[in-house]
Length: 284
Image: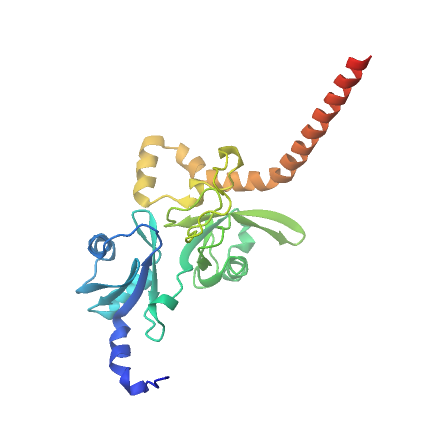
């Protein structure tokens, strides 16, 4: 039997939901709500009271006393709990908790090696659109964002491999662009995904990818300000090289990828040729 719910019957609940968010810890390991609550309060620093309610497995409804605190939390995404992505979405009172999908997350992406003419809002939107949904490009009022890199805020699919960079074509000239992610949580260095889900890593498949074959690593992550400061104090001028190390790895990797594949093919051919020569010598 179908029961028709009248809109006025849910008005009070929906109104209260205006100061709520739905959040999920993307981990197969169960974590108690109080542990998460105490840890996140330190990062969120709400000006009013907030409450956590469990509505599913590692799934929570967070209610704020003040709507401003909710806005700050949504704008401050992504949030990390012990290195794991704590995915946060606006309250959706019309969906059942089991139907809410947490396969999207918002990140600030730094785009390196862009020509100065491309460091603007329009190009940021063009490149960012190949990664996900662009929410913002960090530029001046006139749409120009000159600097060491261009910052673009993008909503990406966390169940897809992270983009390491792109090749752009500017007036017939190809340029390799490297990406780095701010507040990037733990992710798989084998497949490049932040969230595997219950199926696990499809690339690893029971064995670990060799370090020399991995296309991902910690270099894709922008270090926290505290770590940057500590590194600068201990390494001084070496900091700049480390900051660009991941970008160099991507750029060099993309340029050399085809050469490596060609070299490997050539090595196999030479080995076969050697075996044939040895066989001929044996029968002489």
